Length: 134
Image 1 (cartoon, rainbow, N blue to C red):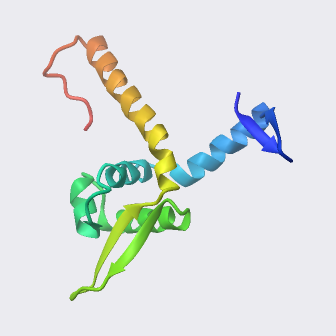
Image 2: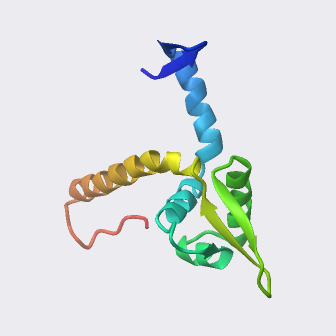
């Protein structure tokens, strides 16, 4: 059970509170791209990441979708958008300290995904030539 601190007192969250929290988390992080964008930025904190680099690095995302997702992540304080003083003007994106709090979630999903992919391969006969959706 999750813990909630109310008026300085810690207590167990009710099932309903946990479900609300799950819904809130999915509202902010849900969809096909947000966690991938956060993971990409988290893995590259030492680099300057601009829009096109993000788009090239995340296979399959359209410019329109990337723009939408970046705006939502910025609104939710998970990334920063910085206009560089260059000509032409460039914009870079970075994960915030608060955004880094999502790292354990993405780490768990990556580890589960690796195990799941292997399990599905095994159930399909274990052949190396089996193609799973990339």
